[in-house]
Length: 290
Image 1 (cartoon, rainbow, N blue to C red):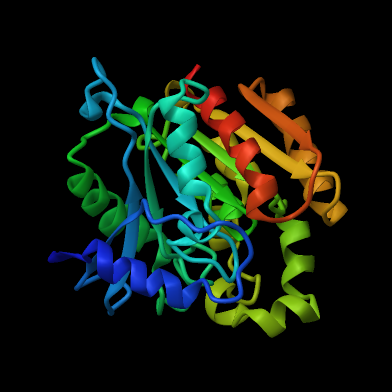
Image 2: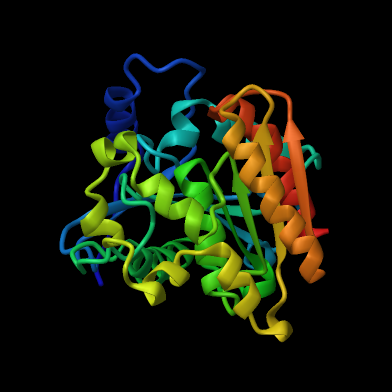
């Protein structure tokens, strides 16, 4: 697979165009690369954020966090909202763990291998983006040093992918997402709004395939996870966003408690956006590596 690194000047130009109309102070710390051949059948970009250089710290030994954006976002979101600077400064000051970040572009595909086979987003993430990004970073983390975090749509993806690949990820963190059992997922896919935003049958089928449904179901995935591959699970929702995020996350938290799974739930002050999520992402990082 050929990886093309986009120069800092080119990446800054792309970022400036994409950021028009966005609020917040913008950064330019992300390194952007292009994959010329992917399982999606087209060129795709990803970004990485390197940890700051600190005396006595070997970059190869640092953890890697795969951060999945939400609907309407992309791999440049951290720069767009000035949050790559915040992470970098927090790590340099010792306020949050030193770590590298991998930032895929998941488009609006829910990070799932679509039911009709047309868009294998999960395979693209696992087999294309992560190996290529870790090669760019020059690291080879084991599962204990690799973590996955997501916000909104990305929170669903991070929880499901983390639980589906416990051999790869030491923790999975889901912020501001709907954590649904089979019945909840069926009702959500029947909603008019979801059908307006997504080709539901293409992505998720008609609901009649129980095996496929269970492969998307965090409840079933955590129950099936091998006990020797336990992971930390972090869940969070905001007090000022749609209450279903908190309700479904708390319900799943109770299920995890019943199973005796190491996890943490945070109900944070704030709403549904990167400025609200960033302090919670920092809490998730601390929980993942402590």
